[in-house]
Image (tube, rainbow, N blue to C red; front, side, top):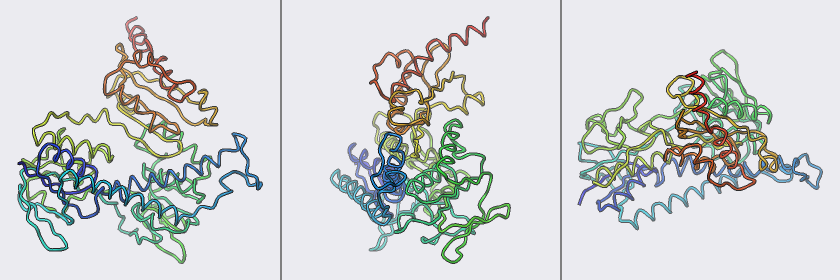
Length: 472
């Protein structure tokens, strides 16, 4: 029986453990932070649960456009409820723990041995787990490193868990901040700025770039920036935060240009650092890049024989879905099952703001910088009947297809339910479906998905006509 030892109980680790057990391996999972990892306990599940609550308030605040008015004369329906942040965060943490418990139960039922402790490699096939009972030596034929990341900390902005917070600490708050400063306008910063604004908190978003979401589709980022500004979020652009300190009952954030921003709390969302230091990786022959991420190939192999890696510690994509797939691929490969390679150009992702932003495949940047010759069509959702019914005017569908063949190679959806709508485009990308075949499938009327099909219809002959124009 093949002995498998997995370091880390996040999506990459626990999904790999399930596959390893399914394929007959003797699987031991060493975890120090709790089964489910940061995705379940401090990141994805908690943040999206908080966002789900804020979405309810967002819908209530916009309900007057549907003819729904509060009986007490308030400006909107959100004014008829009281936001109990303590109760919200209690629910958030309870749900995260319940999800963690469910995963742990499933692992045990499938025959996975869980060791509560911190593991480190002492050689290619030997791991020492430090537990509350002492050290345990584990021999392995296959090792999977799935140790995740932790929040990056600025030297002059050390989180204290009370006023200066990283994203793992926000769920300890019991009262709404009087004025929340969010440092960082990437995905994490944008999601928390959106959520706390919806909960009724005045939000200041400090961005080092011209626009929020600098790494995302520029058209989508522009929509979100406009929505944020319209909702009253104060965005300080081209400003780099250098420090954060407590002052009285508040905080002061110092910017690089000498300005200071004052608030009651600050959330530092300035990136992540891989948990790869001090666990014996380099000594075992595992190559790390200059940022400390484990270098892996498309079947999750590291540079050391028998050692694989999955999840955020690889720096591939900081997504739970990608971590899980990397972990599964590692076990399929290590234990001799049929294995697909990880195809990064088919990965779908979503930003949980209001509206949501979902993407897959080829990007606008790929086209603009000449890495792809795809044709592009963007269709605003403002004319969509379902969008009109919901009083939704911000958003669009964008599709990318190859010239001549019309094969769909990418897409962007900005809509209230983009995370659900993107699956159809993701399926089209992975299966190389043409715009014509996509458009011929039935959609429901009225629906937002109808606009995805409409975008495909408008791309009919688009590439062929462009080629003909060049020929003539």
